[in-house]
Length: 146
Image (cartoon, rainbow, N blue to C red; front, side):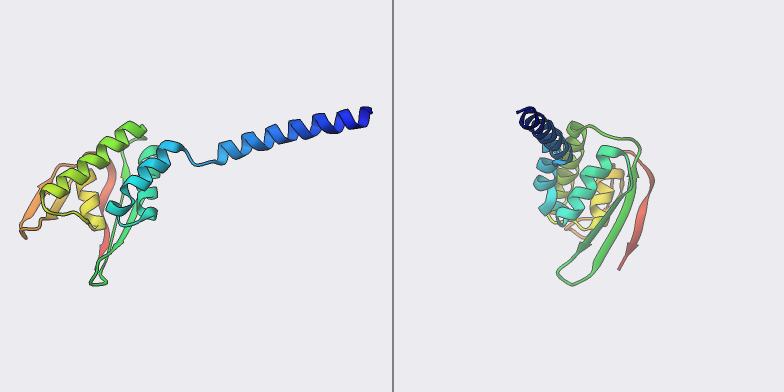
């Protein structure tokens, strides 16, 4: 009888610990919502994850996009600080809206970077437009472009 109680206690304790570990490892709701919301605009889920994760932690962000003509655009930057999910939502929304006003609905990596940290973007009219970014950054600048 005591063995059964001990086993039951250990089983329940182990189940609770496993549940807590699974909850700790589960994706954060705000992270997932933001990443899913901006995946199409950012050129894919991986880019959206990099944006939200990097902005949330203040760590390096790398973006890679491919155009229909098979050209690749790479960009990278590091936000000046970790941001709240509300700040990330505002920054991404502002960047998306600013690019849309220029006629850029599906931006490449460098255009996303410029919209977030500042830089120049060629709009749909073909004119180069200086953008003021919605996020401060360290070490800003394109990594490469082909």
